[in-house]
Amino acid sequence: DTEVTQTPKHLVMGMTNKKSLKCEQHMGHRAMYWYKQKAKKPPELMFVYSYEKLSINESVPSRFSPECPNSSLLNLHLHALQPEDSALYLCASSQELTEETQYFGPGTRLLVL
Amino acid sequence: SQQGEEDPQALSIQEGENATMNCSYKTSINNLQWYRQNSGRGLVHLILIRSNEREKHSGRLRVTLDTSKKSSSLLITASRAADTASYFCATDLGGFKTIFGAGTRLFVKA
Image (cartoon, rainbow over all chains, first blue to last red; front, side, top):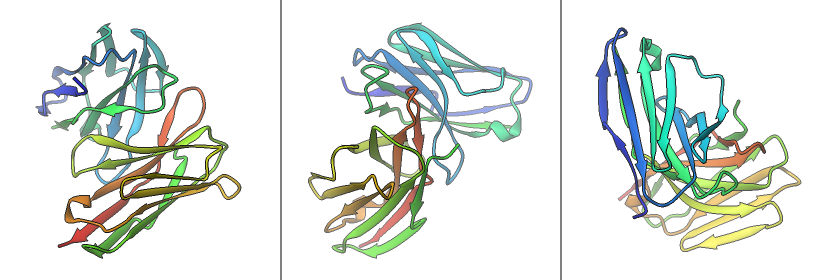
């Protein structure tokens, strides 16, 4: 299995809602990543997990809360988002943190109303 | 912060023609990668070139790296309509961060 899956594919939420994005991989990768991508822009790194521990937080607002329950799963909990948070959220994984090649999921397209 | 700058921003060619995209970066790197993204989808890794390499091939892809000029190019030969996508270069800044360039949107007309 060489796939990174993300659910849901699309999500519409209000500014007072709480929702979660999920990412899963079964490649035995020990590093997992969250990226945010606005339209016609490159992906921007948000968080990096290595061996289920948070390694990098790129000064992301606290309304985004990552969680890595086990080596195959990565969640992104969303609370009190703003309309400007609407974007494509991409999850990726790599064999190790030092492994350069990342495998991306298809993304969750988020719309905050 | 954006490490890589790509040009052109958009490129439209006929099927069968070659497409060349360029990437420039600002700081020293260990490697440079190229990814492809179909509209609204995840990124697909195409090729990685290390700082001590000058050229690399993979199928119809040819990547060059000039560390003295801090630039790289991606050449797609004999393009196909299915090559229509956005192409991003990505560099490592050390500290295990991957930074993507602004991207080139390629449109291949059948």
